[in-house]
Length: 475
Figure 1 (cartoon, rainbow, N blue to C red):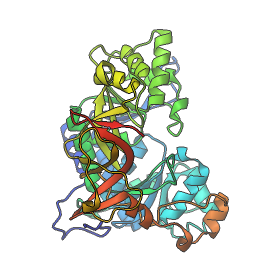
Figure 2 (figure 1 turned 180 degrees about the vertical axis):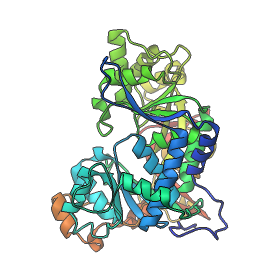
Figure 3 (figure 1 turned 90 degrees about the vertical axis):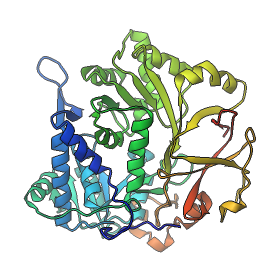
Figure 4 (figure 1 turned 90 degrees about the horizontal axis):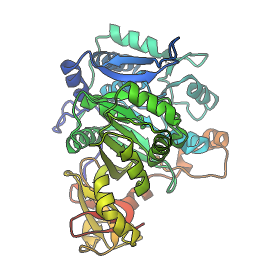
């Protein structure tokens, strides 16, 4: 079984991989194209205004910020929490952290304050790259975050020290520091699950995982440079920039997508003539309902993506009615631990699988991506030590789905499972020692199945394969 490296990899025999290299290529090809657009307050005429950065600026500043981080003392494997609002600075910092070799800790603020604080304490970061309010919380809980010596404030810095974003940028611009080389198995990020199906767990992402995700999403859906994406998922700013697509962040609370104002989504979409959009089913339901009621359209939108859950047929129909006549609507299937796994298009759902779903056949999530291997095995509640202990089931028989591939996480973070719901945030952060936290050993034992030098991930989803090789989710 391969190990995950957090050390410099210059002498490694593994291939050199960093998804940020894709940005450098894009910046050379289309330097003056807008990479990121963020809505502002509007001008005196009432028109929407936007803050923007080009691909050349994004690439240049990401490298400067990365060198600034190295000058501060960031090394390959340094764990840094990123808590910054979606926008130009967010995307620049994501690429900077990747180039610096740091392990970026990404967490969904929508999981709630209690889980948020517990997850951040559990990962034992060495610094925060964060907005002022997050730095203030870290300072209040400084006993728990005593290792956080590498701090960068995006916004106004008060009494907690460290660098500001602008100071980091200027430091990097003056620096001649070399940036580390990263390889396929090097740690790139720890991304926490939402906690909706159990305790939040820190999923280790390697550089190969990010690079594979970009390659698979771009290749399968034929996403080409020059498009414009309405990004209702902040991390898609990373994928878009690596594919040469302009990221348009709408004015919304990304931690509460269902609360998004459809008029603001429409404004961003039509101001930039977006050609694609990633959003949750809740967003598409609300936006399509508004468009239907008010006769609104997004005529340039040709690639519609809904992520996070199956989309009801009525929402598929409503959404397709308010976009380009030749648009496609896709629903990728996956999880934080492995994405993407499979995909299905709305025409297939509305034309065939919907009827079978209504008849009790389950929900078809579609066909797998090319880099994914998958099997349905007989359901076993206990950990599975080796793949030989599994019984693979034939077509049509219900069992548990397992997957493997380069976009599948190799493990949960060593100190990542969060529990102890009986105590308050401050009590947890101040008094809980590392030794008393649940470790990831149990979660890895349950979720991973060794198979030679590879690992299978147990999805925990029950279903079956049909005669066309599609997976049907049953629970």
